[in-house]
Image (cartoon, rainbow, N blue to C red; front, top):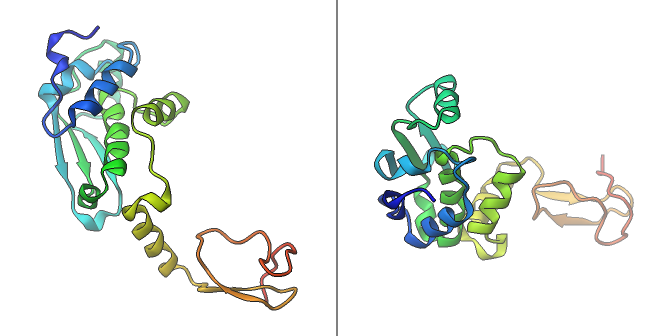
Length: 179
């Protein structure tokens, strides 16, 4: 579909992930895929940045859209991954699949993008991912409330979720924060 040069994955991309990407993508929606082998660089970014992945094109957005429309090469592309992803293969593959879709020309986060990423490399569940658990813990530690206290029955419990509870675990009434 794309030609012989596309069959070899870019350096740093796992071959099984690359094959899955080739099977799922259509040249109409991924016009940059044939150019990734020679234009893509995969590196690890500074851990302090806080994001799992980033795709960076060397050209501006208007030129990128013009090249996408005319199916021209995208120029140099860099995918930056968080170094902690090396310890979590499932999350690394999910993040890399997400970024490879951007690099191949699917630049928006729409239903097509989500569907393809989920088919190629589904995201791990929170309980299966050490990296996601660490990220969640870091967010929880930065939040002002460490415990919740029910305004109805006075029951107190330790915060384990980022979102506000909907009901009290003891009295089961809708949660009202104790004032």
